[in-house]
Image 1 (tube, rainbow, N blue to C red):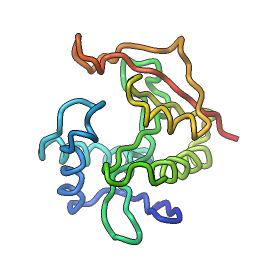
Image 2 (image 1 turned 180 degrees about the horizontal axis):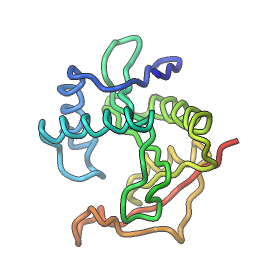
Image 3 (image 1 turned 180 degrees about the vertical axis):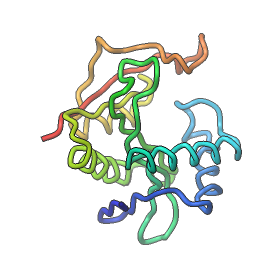
Image 4 (image 1 turned 135 degrees about the horizontal axis):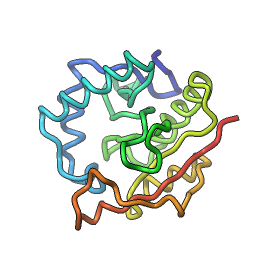
Length: 177
């Protein structure tokens, strides 16, 4: 750790990451398919959870740092599949980037590095991901990463309120090798 790509460094979280991550997670476009904008306390708690997971397991949703601009542009990495979902206990890949970095290949670059790290270091055969059907950018990236959809595993996310348009989720996975 850290993981370096051509343009990015995926690394553990630091206190100075809180303000830029807060800005990302309060951007209405970024959270459009994720729920409500997050508060400073929620960001601090999320970073603490990720750092605890990284200390315990060696991986998390890592901070994504732009090498040229020397700034946090979001996160990407690996975590445990959410409880009560079809991928509970499996390795889940996830990402979230500043909206001004969308469409420039950063998410794919970070995701490819995360997948490569996971298959090389975790002794697993498959990595999973979930999103809402309306989040075409997210599932489009999953498909560009070679992930395949599992329609029989579509589910209502237990952490999302009943009646929310974000309740239904779709499932993708990719095999290593």
